[in-house]
Image 1 (cartoon, one colour):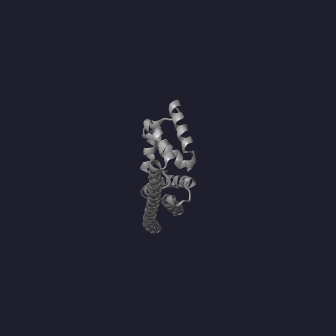
Image 2 (cartoon, rainbow, N blue to C red):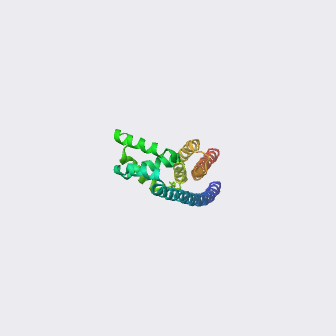
Image 3 (tube, rainbow, N blue to C red):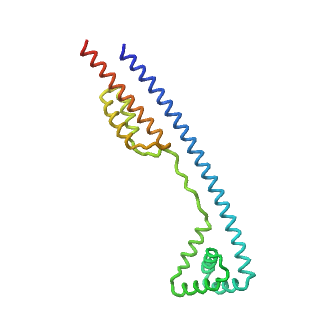
Length: 218
């Protein structure tokens, strides 16, 4: 009779634990989805801001290279070397913001081209990469811990319901898993599985200890 009651309690506990784990998984999924959407919105705002800044600078540079004699003269000097040389001048000016040194910048670019220090193909590649913008990397929502031990503890505990010799294995693996798991939000599901495996393992061991005592005393 005692064994039947213990088995019923064990089944009730398993149902409750699985329900709690399912609720936790759903909550974690919603939290990750919310974080992903917030990250996407932040990235879109940032890219929108950078795009506006880039457009403003491009417009400013176009006006300067057309209507300001000093800037126009340096652009015309670099034209024989191709668009990459002009892009390098524009990049240096944008980094410094010092229009009074535009001639010095052009002189240095010319010297670097003639000496081979400046790789115009690299400048062009950098310019294309910069114009493409940046894309935020959103991690795939999931568990922050990839260790299989929590799942193994739960599996051996469930097997122990039919084959009790697996219960010590579930307990040992469960304790090893707890030593490796942290307390972060992403590891909550793994901790739930480990707790279930430990609890079921200990309950089955307790049931068999009681059975052995009853047999020995009976």
